[in-house]
Amino acid sequence: MTREATPQVSPEPRPEAPPEPPAAPAWTPLSGAAHRIALEVLLRGPLPRSELARRLDLSAGTLTRLVRSLLDRGLLVEDGTAGNAARGRPSRPLDVVAGTHHFIGAKITDEDVHVVVTDLRAEVVASGRAPLPGRDPAAVVTTLTALARDLAAGVPRVTAAGVSLGGQVAGHATVLRAPFLGWEEDVPLGARLGEALGLPVVVDNDLLALARAEHWFGTGRGLDRFALLTTGIGVGYAVVMHGRLVESPDAGIGMVSHFPLDPLGPACPEGHRGCATAMLTAPSISAAVSVGRRRETGYEECLDLAAAGEPVAASVVTAAGRALGRLIAAVANLTMAGTVILTGEGIRLAEVARDAVREGLRAGRDRRASDVTTIVRPIDFSVWARGAAVTAIQRYVLGGPV
Image (cartoon, rainbow, N blue to C red):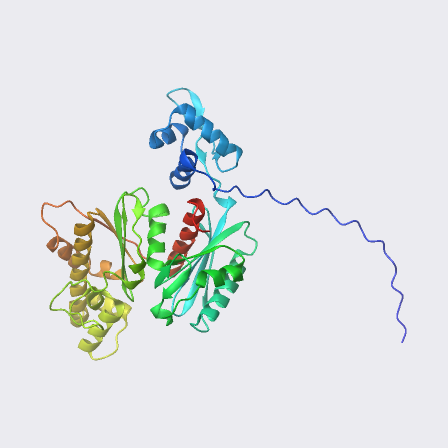
């Protein structure tokens, strides 16, 4: 068997590789007024110079000097042209280029991982979910890493990653306890994921991460004080005071989980009668309705039956609604927060039992007290993952450990 000779062909000259894009501008080591300007534009922009000067109490000369430096560094850009009727000349608002940096955010549940990729303003550009083959740390790291790499492929400049889960976290790096995953000993999740992803990684309690997202880029943006309540498998609580999220290592314990709401209510697994866990969580509501109806009834079915007027479900859900109203009142009374955001995978309760929630809220507030604004936000786990990305954004922008 003979083989034909292969003609020799001179290789064509290889095209020059396109030049590398310029490095993304870094927020640190910004300090003082320059950092305040960049942060204000990130959170509130685009903003005209006059509004920036007013908000930050800066003179026109100081603002001009600092803005020029930020423009030269690529941290800010002039965003379009808007006419200034008062002076007859154009005004060019300042803004950030959100796409100069991207961040991975992940939420870990007991069944799966939810991952998003966002820009600098936490706008989601890619999202996905993957089931967990196991709950041990190695399985979680492997699954999360594979999904994150897939979603981030082709996304320019992934700067850092954030991951959140239900549990106690120390130093934004180590999970001390995550009961839904069965983790009862310290897990250095930040270091393991950082090594796997090749990125700086911050770890956060999922409720705190969600509150960060609401504070910087969500319903709580611009509010000096607000509270966040979540219901679902558990009951969660976070509060922003004087423009800052109140943080504590106890966040992962569930500090309002056993807050007493109804002395005649059912008992929770810890034996507390009528506490928030017994009255408001999806498993408790499902269990109470199942006993009354003498058949297994899922949480969503409980709400559907209550909305249709089925006696057992309506009784349980109405009692839960009143308890939720009393919890909102207690939070508002103790924190003086005028706005309470209600969210979580079980928060449909607030819609189905709307009248009962209002009744409980009125009963728990002095009649002379200011009205409490309650905002119900339906949610899915990709929103929790976005919260983890915001933790990474905050740590990057504010000069934290990432």
